[in-house]
Image (cartoon, rainbow, N blue to C red):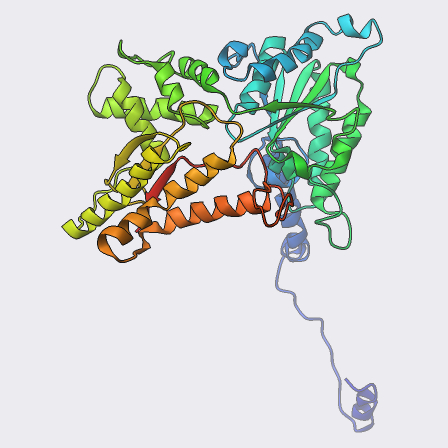
Length: 466
């Protein structure tokens, strides 16, 4: 209102009267309207805090971010895993005997000034038993086992990963001697300086905290950190220096004898028919890991149950192996012309597999559709192979292209059925030239980056895709 308005009214003889406005409410209503929102906010935070104390709800998620989510396995309360439950990786077991001995009797080593390794990295292909081996070490030593995956450390909120690392090592110190196991170490242990933009990333802060914690405790505390990875080439060099993960244990794929031992472990509770030969099954499964063999036993047991048998027979193992390697059967209605073309295609694979010197023996040929293939020719070596001669690789390529050659000879046309064969032959031929120096024209030159040896695998079959 204009300040001169009141003076103007008085000059013109206008009578002015003013009375206080009646609020029309009690003092309690005024108080609630004034302080009600603040009270509601305080009540909400109290509720969140109490939920956090019980470990659930939104409050637990907000205030418990910095807490470690590691799962603790105690040999007295949980099922004890020992070296008797681990088979087929005797070399890796022998490497870890010293770790077990140190956890049992640390004075044996410390009295002479020695120190056990702080960190041991388990390197191997997926499914070779790295986690099982780590739990067996804890079971043999009779100490608590804290297990946590590398991806569980990192969250969207910066600093949470480092806080979880501190809490994990704090719990291990409280229950020392103990073992800390970090699965998939490469998810947080990658070389620094590659993923950060404008500063340290959450992954790098977590890695820095792990390095700090491993420097901060003494081997006399009885804490040993085990970590598993199948990509050791990407790990930060600071992780691998002496005093951290300075000891590497390679967990290889099992050989024929190891596969037989693994099958014996996984069939302890499976009723087997008298004629079952696990050695024969082991010979038919080159390149399969411990996890693959466990899955094979499970699939064989399921097939036997589906067939209403009282025990598992050798045929169940063979059928389960075909299902795993070649894929499940697919009931497709095909014309007689398509079935004939598929038969000639697979016959071309089989004939070359039988007559080409150095090729793997042919063990199964089928025109029953399996997986993405309309027909499959399965070849496997008589013994495990660790080195591939050039003649063997050339025989592989010839066998792969036998299906297309048979189609052209018989029908005089080409189809899309050789797609998978051409893919495998091209990949193998490119590796021979660019990685293994088997080209007379290019010579001993590496033209392609080295692949991860723990993830690569040569297939032993040729398939005709639709």
